[in-house]
Amino acid sequence: MKVKLELYGASRDLSKKSFIEFNIEGKSSIKDLKKKIINYVDSNFKGNNNFKKIVEASAFCSEDNNIVSDNYIINKDQKIGIIPPIGGG
Amino acid sequence: MLHAKIIDLAKERIRPEDAEEFISSSKFGASIVFYGTVRENNENKKVTGITYDAHNEMVVKSFKEIYNEVDEKLKIKSKAVFIEHVKGYVGLGEVSIIIAIACPHRAEAYTLSRYIIEEIKKRSPIWKKEHYQNEESEWLKGNPIQAN
Image (cartoon, rainbow over all chains, first blue to last red; front, side):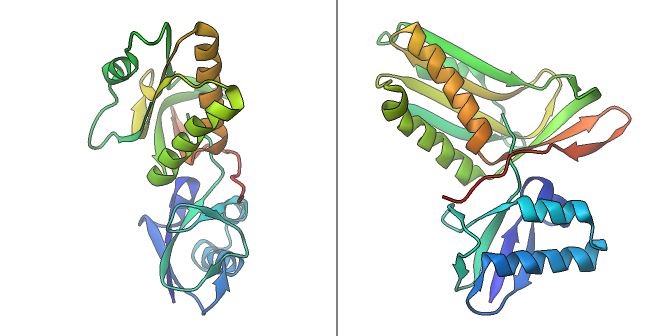
């Protein structure tokens, strides 16, 4: 399955595009996706610790714009948004 | 009555006159317009501007949730609320957010205005990248959003 990870805030530094695509196995959870993103940071940014911290501190949102927990199961191709710590206004 | 919108500065500008017009009504005896603007200093760094990022759908959803819970939490039933937040680059002194409130009485208008900005800070997925004089730009550290 394909996950299109949409980037926001500090996570935009993870790519020149506004998203990163990941291939994941069936019935993967957000927790599994997080591991994939950390692996991506290891491969593409020499394990940059600041980037890893951003991923660890982020929430994730589903296509229907709800924040989902680490146990949320991704069971089809879909977009997932990474939501780093917020602070607008 | 609520107006909630993200203004993408690449396409349009934020217009205080829209806020004034939205809250204008003889039903209300008190109105407050709050502007958030970009200031020149943050943590001893000379700021030159801020780039705002937002998850548009979630931000508008959060504005609606905040508005809807006011009836119950603050017992403020009669009100007009206009909220717009920008997305994109904002220079010094320019407006990043407008919260315009109208209520029958001043006490509830002040309470509501303060409540909305504080909740937006805690709950709305908006991010700031500050730009500095002679220093590299950086995303500001924020507060993590929790899953329900």
